[in-house]
Length: 449
Image 1 (cartoon, rainbow, N blue to C red):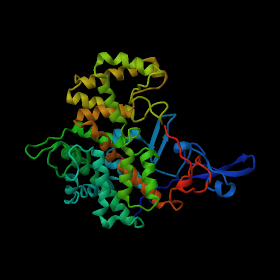
Image 2: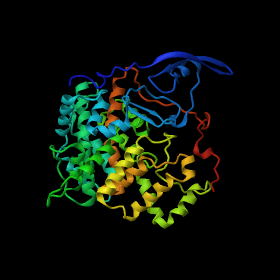
Image 3: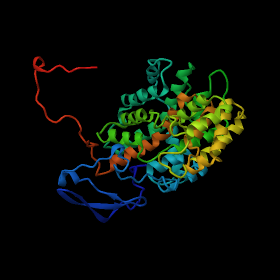
């Protein structure tokens, strides 16, 4: 396909609908107000400093739109998540991850022919350069798989010089496909290295999720049979985590990309951000909480602690910072989780028994219902991934595989945006005012406790 990533998108963009007046003691400034396709209106403060000498102050950028985007829309109050206008529930129930990748990259769902071409292109890029095996052997065996992912993905730029020119749409397309294709291979290699097993090469006759499971769990000494229920669960997990608007890791990718950095370096930066326990590590934290509870008989004690506002203990995997009503991905993930548990017949496993009892309480206890502390996608995905056989250290790695397409779609959109500028947030400075240098011999000694 010779078109750029956005050629097929026919959105209306945004339009100016009114003006807002900003007033301070010594300043009055008219600011344009814009309205997108859906969602709240935004006040344009782009020229505020140049015209008035004022900055805006918004720690965490929770009330600031850093860009315009046509990829993903979230309404946290109503529990809505749309990719290019399509509800996440419909994509997860009826589509595939590869189909979702095409949608995020090109703006429309593919017809049968385009889907087959795209799927084939991804399959043909699954192998990594043979020399990259040396990178893995340079890590300690007990290295966290996310540390390995950050290093190896960043190193891709040292091997694929023909897709580093970000001004060339064709090279951007090749780099995008390469990362979507190679991320499962790199992740599986990180897993195999951590458990001391030989690397398993990808198989181009398998679909995306099946191929990943094959690379993780097959061994050379015996055949590995892929269970379609587990493969479908893996595919759904990838769909549900593919993109989530301007979250911390996506904003990191965009910020790194705004400097002109190559796409492999930008995605490596996104992986590093995703590693944080407040972001991609949430499902790992939920499993660690189950370990902390230890036994079903201890649940009442921890429920009481969770309800006590003076107790620092918090139930991980319940409620959501963005979704104030319900997580639209939660129902699909719950169904997927229970399908895997039924297929694996492991509901009596101690940790899973704790999880299922917590789920029952959260869905029936008035305290949880009133505060909308429902089990979220992280709670169910952690249980599911454990049932599939992954250690908790791999949970965020799997998140990175899924989110790669979102990062790449957002990165491409940023590159193609004519209004894109290098990211340069401002600050509210609270340090010392200007002061003069004093030679050491004349400085008054500072007492230290």
